[in-house]
Image 1: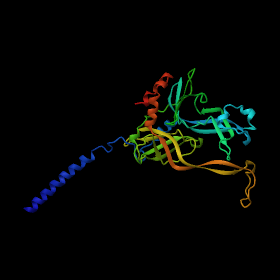
Image 2 (image 1 turned 180 degrees about the horizontal axis):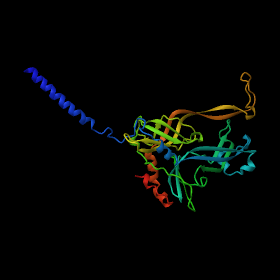
Image 3 (image 1 turned 135 degrees about the vertical axis):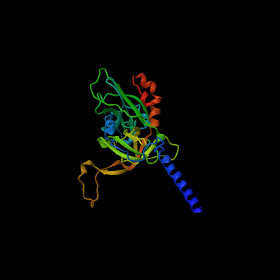
Image 4 (image 1 turned 180 degrees about the vertical axis):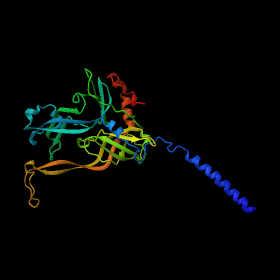
Length: 340
């Protein structure tokens, strides 16, 4: 009799247990709207290809005129503004500074275009001072920026866009243009939502799209968050090369194929140092066992720490757009869809 009671109890326990499992399994697999930490499921090529149509290559170039002085002239920074540089300089030379990056079309119709990128691209100083080693109060040369060229490839009037808003602290700038006549170019504005930083988590999987080394590319990476209260940036382990600044960061919501724009590629961790370089006339000097006695030049070298890439958060981008909403509307640009 006792064995029958025990058997019935076990049978009831098994029944209730088997009933509980389906109820537990019926719960939604993803309750949160966090971005996925796994490879997105399905074929994402079409979505990425569409996004890439709004991503453009940005090139800048600035020409400097450098005025050189002798030590005995005793030229200081304070006195430079009062001088006729051409008559005071004992020699004049010219050089240029160039940079490239990635820009994204936020809005476009046949009459106007609005483009976003990082503010540091092409943001060269107006004046560069060089001092003597023996006396840092005396100027050995002063370089003055002259002509600056700005060009976004694949956009009508890409060298004539106006700077609408610049925020160096946020490292964001908007360029735009209102055309005098309707354009026949088939351009596509970015057509995915702007995401939220709070949806990113440690290990979130992201795509990066831009023009590293001037070549349109897509790569991938894993997100790391700052442990402090810093909310303006986050880190990605993706490989960074010059020209990637301003590139898009893209993520997918968990359990869906919905892509969102979650930031801009900003910069990379790097170390800089100076090294001695032989004269360009001696570039074929290859005898490493013989001392070099010709002219030497000091050259600044930057070593990139690949795999530590900084990204501007989507919250900062939205804040930047909100702060300048009125000014942009006055210029005829509607950015309401980026403020939702």
